[in-house]
Amino acid sequence: MILKRKFRYILIESSAPMDWKALSAEISNKLSAYLGERFYINADPRVVANCGSNAFILRVNRGSEQDVALGTCYISDINSISVGLYTIKTSGTIRSLLDYASRAYK
Image 1: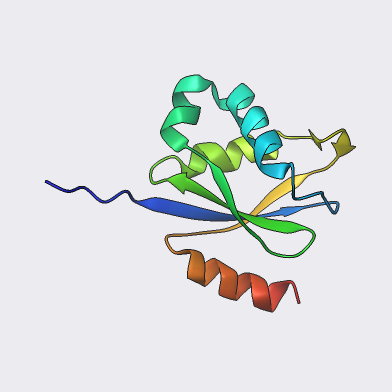
Image 2: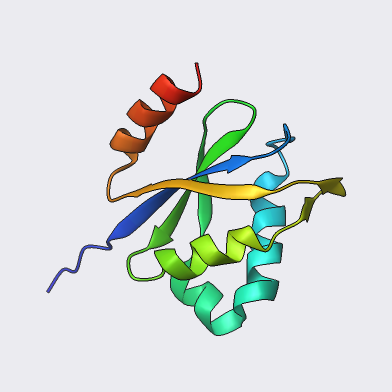
């Protein structure tokens, strides 16, 4: 029996421009600290797309998108830069978020 993994994609906007090279590791560390190891492993968050200098798309396992969206709200600094992260939209496909981001962040 083959089971397909189901993901949810979260469009997140930051209050300040960020360096996207080290963003994935820093987001992972902060979410792991907030959610705890069990919920972090279940969510498996990954930065999958960069939508301009202030927005990115985060991929999580289905069912954990609310926990991750709440966890990103508590992140106050990334790479020693004070920043606020805001959840803009959640979707089941990355294509719809990329279309939305291309219109919103021209």
